[in-house]
Image (cartoon, rainbow, N blue to C red; front, side):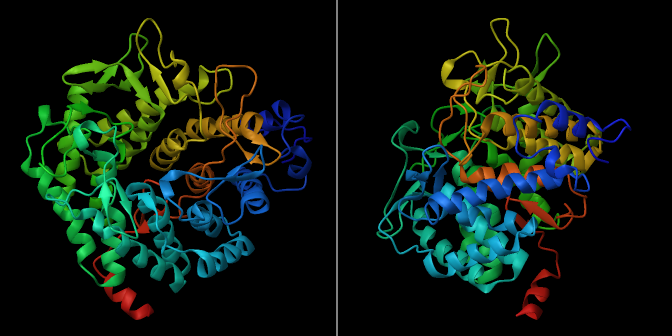
Length: 496
């Protein structure tokens, strides 16, 4: 069906053609000659993001799409190519074969870890190690396996602490680590040291070296020895004393992906990792008891806990939890499967409202439920949007697990908003204030926009047999890793 046909258009065609006809280059012009497929639009968005990165920032970490030059982040030290490595699997999944080939050649010739650089262990693990592992599993290209294992070995000195809880920052030449100076009493951060498990288990699987898996299993041993306040996990843990720092708890920033990785460790183990399963469902029970609340307007949200007091704020990062609750519903104890799906649906609705209540229909970095407001950012430093994926991630999981069409509709609303407000000549940029009618761009195209946001949109509008959940889990940067079925080891040997 084209935009000119007389039959009623679907909501996606109608909205695309009518609302964006004059402002969006991905519009009716090419759709007239295309079999209409929303996944095709996300592919075109990927092409725009990638082509401009290649044109203006090739080989550098990220793109400044308005300045049309490279953008550097201290998260990666002077390791380069974050966007290339982060985007490898998206290029492969979208069958952008020439672009994937160019990216692979850059990795072969230019991706260098022999640098004197202090890096974020967490960020380098989820983006670089995760991206390389995923590219290997999808393509079978040996260069990606070798680079992943090489980088994994360079990260191992981060675990050289009295407890084995790793440092947040590591100089990968000297092997000297430290923690963020702002983190409570020299603590490591729950979301950072708790978001290594999937990648390190796969590093052991692919290298035959058990040390990677041993390092992350030790983290669990430390956590299981500790008393948890009200069953909750504080965001800070001192790697020298093995004791909690401040009793702050968040399912958003500083905590988020720790919980995600407990569930996904169990799923990735072909549901044999009973320890991970128990830790996850016990944590969800504590979260539901102490953090999940309902606003007077009927919106379910996840508050933050500070020494027993609730702050009625929810971050954009926390919006991943809707998809997590739904993904974990099937294994929920005490016949709570339906309840966990409903919880996921309620979080998805709240996060959609945080988008819908802005001028730009893009969600703020954080939104509040106090002072008479609901799902609205009240502080200027929380009104920005940096191309984050978490809301679209939850839509994708909710669609796959319920097939309720509203999740695709909501995803399409996000596409429209991204195209209208974030797309610029030189790529895609974040926005400084989503409540303002006029765009003020931050001039950064984050690598996770290509790795996560666009991939989750593509999967939302694709068939369920593309990366099916029974065979793949996604790391927190949306890099798919295969479930380690009991016969996987033999398969690997047979492939070599």
